Amino acid sequence: MRKKLVVGNWKMHGSRAANAVLLAGLKEAGPWNADVAVCVPFPYIAETALALTGQQVAFGAQDCSAHEQGAYTGEVSSAMLADLGCRYAIVGHSERRAYHHESDQLVADKAKAALAHGVTPIVCVGETLAEREAGRTEEVVKRQLAAVIHTLTHCIGEIVLAYEPVWAIGTGLTATPEQAQAVHQVLRLQLHAATQKSDAMRILYGGSVKPDNAAQLFGQPDIDGGLIGGAALKAADFAAICRAAM
Ligand code: PGA
Image (tube, rainbow, N blue to C red; front, side, top):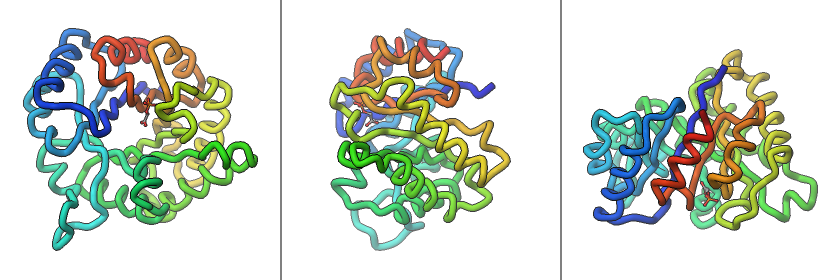
């Protein structure tokens, strides 16, 4: 039985004051019988680490560089994330693929860099609405995952995978539990062909997860938790989603 994992993706939201309120709210709402984490903007990682000392909630970043170190202005390395105690780094979020033109290979390289420093990459895959309507969902997510499998080879079992249909992110349009499960099953089978660890690997669903739809999504056999955007910014909502994962 895989333990559920719920990860908050704060995106480019927050302030020191707002974060303190949110993290204090989570502290009061726990503990949960699920793994819980928040992925926060880079400048807030250190303070988040401090606020979460002794707490059940882990923390991480929303991206990392594919490079080890050097003249890469504005980049943050996975060694730095590890230095700050990050457990996770989201890589390949659709917003980065779209707005920063991140390729499947770059995403795979970032995942490799994270793993090299003991930071678990949460690798995001997902199709756009046009791709879904053209019947290309499977082809797209399998291509995105294949690049990561090819690059990580025997380490693929160490990642967390997140299926996030682009058309469901921040739109209020959630994939139905059946739609999500169908894709998760495809991804699990692809992992199964690559690693003996596939049964133990967690595949999260992301895209307009809310307190009122979380339990149904998390009840699907291949959905092992969620990557939560908007609803992770309110302690009560995020806590309710974490409870739904228990
Ligand atoms: P959302 O975002 O929950 O606001 O749809 C999810 C994500 O982008 O990770």
